[in-house]
Image 1: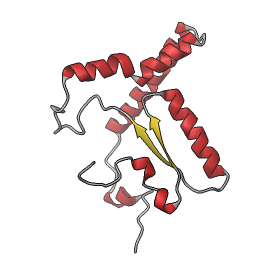
Image 2 (image 1 turned 90 degrees about the vertical axis):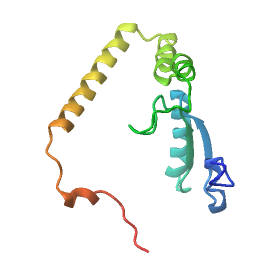
Image 3 (image 1 turned 120 degrees about the vertical axis):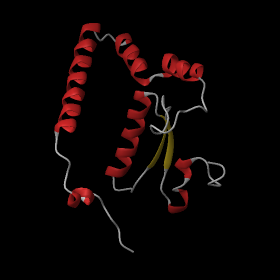
Image 4 (image 1 turned 120 degrees about the horizontal axis):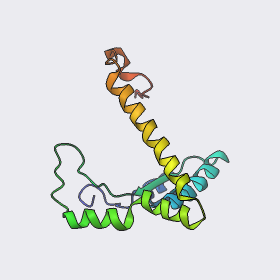
Length: 141
């Protein structure tokens, strides 16, 4: 980031255009929700866009060709054990009184939805080339 930009805090990049921004801990579900509510309120009032920079952690490399050797296994394991957003959200819900069996039911429905979506994607025919730009905004200058 430092080599590519004088401003390394991406949420500040809209300042010159009077676009407010905020840095958000993307590993905290409740913080993300709170920030999204603030941004949505701002936008819905007709005040224009909000730039949100969500700080997250990838457990894997960027792609299949990225073995992520720039991080140790211990670092990744520490992030999974102490900063995982799903685990933290589950802990918070349990602390607020949600029953464990209700969480298991939600998890079961999520897994079924994901499995169904994956099956649909894997068993669907390849789209036509003409569909490549469907629902993609292409601006011409």
